Image (tube, rainbow, N blue to C red):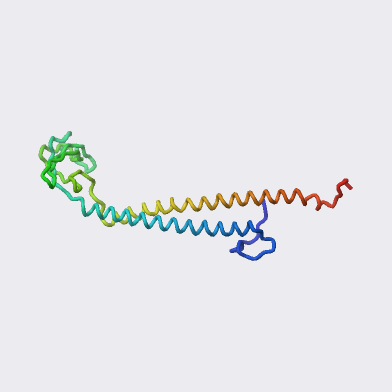
Length: 195
């Protein structure tokens, strides 16, 4: 394990007579990788955040509630569904904006009778969709998705910079080995004949 002294900030940028060209290249690679990491993460996160918020706002405008009616009695009994978590699937039908009839399945309380009104959400074409997210839910969802995409985008330049620095380090070690093989025997103080 090599001894390391106190941490010196910006050591890669300081003048040093022992600094090689490879050290300067590595300094620029590290700086570029960090700049790209931050830039890619922030830009990707903000772009996706805005896109998700716009999509969820469009859903709030375009999706609307419609009253549907059960076309069959729901299985089970009303007593079995006393807790709010007990729901069963039942078929419902509703009329679209163009007076066309649509059908689908929703979760209702057990024992609901034929014709019971149920509120469902539909899109422009009358297809059943989930209830749209509120503004607060949309902000949280967009922030989470944007943050995940931003982190994912930031990983690419970060890993690329680490890989490139690793290759530069291996190249530098190989150069040291070559130089040591050439000059190392001269430092021993022994002559070539062993005396």
